[in-house]
Image (cartoon, rainbow, N blue to C red; front, side, top):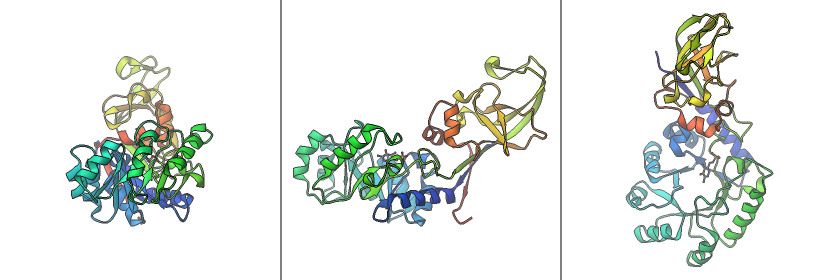
Length: 349
Ligand SMILES: *Cc1c(COP(=O)(O)O)cnc(C)c1O
């Protein structure tokens, strides 16, 4: 088979969610963020594994994602839409039983007019300046909203992956002030905020990346493995070059393996001459530029070239690979292509 293999360990995913649930505390509900197709890993598979482990609330980015997730999960779990109630979303929200997190007075009025009595939450902007109702507008709006009417009031931290950043406590104070007197569940923290301590947890936490094995949850178990088949191997003499732009030159006699996988698979070009692949425990450097479907790897030091080399594995996590490519683990995960053959390892396997 010439296609790379993406193995997704749903058992590790569930254990990561359970660990974040334990840190969140006994009286706090731990939701699960499965936007962007479950950070690229398959929202349906991911959410079903988490639902079986006890997760009851799922967050997606858009109503379209919510509809697809409802189809995968069936009736029962609570599906919440971070983009809120956009124009054109009404039928999706009604027909699939989605709960929009309303981000503005305009969204609030759209929701009240289109679907009176349909559940909603409120997203507040406490300083990230991205989504949510701003303090000034909220001051006017909240007089018109019964304190127990929303299913949730939430906000999002901008700097939670930097525990000492002053904006964390500033947003905590703003959130506490803005939600004072509300009589509904409150939520401020994603993965990073869970790790900042109990004062950030309120009634519900919303982990995403940590479940998928990414930083800032350092204790996370790796969830993904990407194995790329070796198509052929060749010997180069000193002075010969490899790949587009001839950017890598052999300074001695070397063995180069060409493997199936490239920037079309989310193995971005910035990894060129920088990332490594693994033959078991042994690191093998990329030699030359990443091309669309192929990588070239220096395997000179291997006694025997295996049938496949790993680019994501316990020796090179999504964050370690991201660092070699000048990006973050979130981007590596969500760019993993649909071309891989996907294999899910069931939690009880
Ligand atoms: C993406 C997102 C999350 C999850 O964030 P992680 O850092 O992946 O844990 C939680 N809440 C909101 C509003 C988000 O946009």
